[in-house]
Length: 173
Image 1: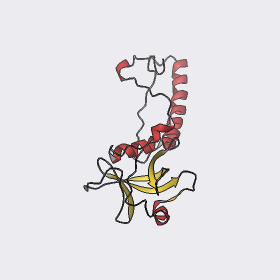
Image 2: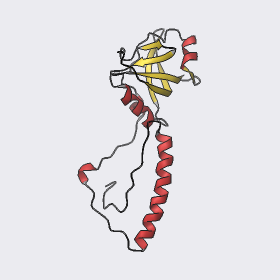
Image 3: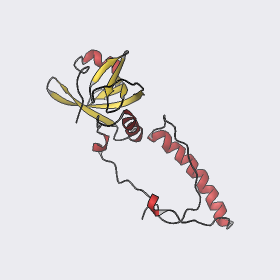
Image 4: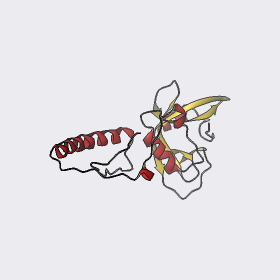
């Protein structure tokens, strides 16, 4: 059983709003290296005694699938931002839009939370204050960089110049 057994040593690691999979991987590796060294020395010197962990707080996550990256625009902007942070490396977050009747996948490489009290239509792409936004259940996200499947990564403001039907479209699965 994964993560079962006594706790020998524990450390709280601060996670900030800019952290994503890659930055957390580095933070955890660095902290893990230090804690492992400390744990081994303290075990050898008999300075550690394990304590039982609360089994009700143990959680696990199976393997990720590509479908985990699909954006549900009926969730909040904060939830979508967290999903982006979690799936930053793989499978990335993505959605679909109809481009002249053809369903096309769009991968979102860089997004930001748009803090506003305005109400936005879920999944609708708009140009607001010079930014490409997509509405969510609560708030909106700013699309900074995106990639149409099979194409190059590009800034959203440049993308909309070539895909004029993107603004006003409603994204979905």
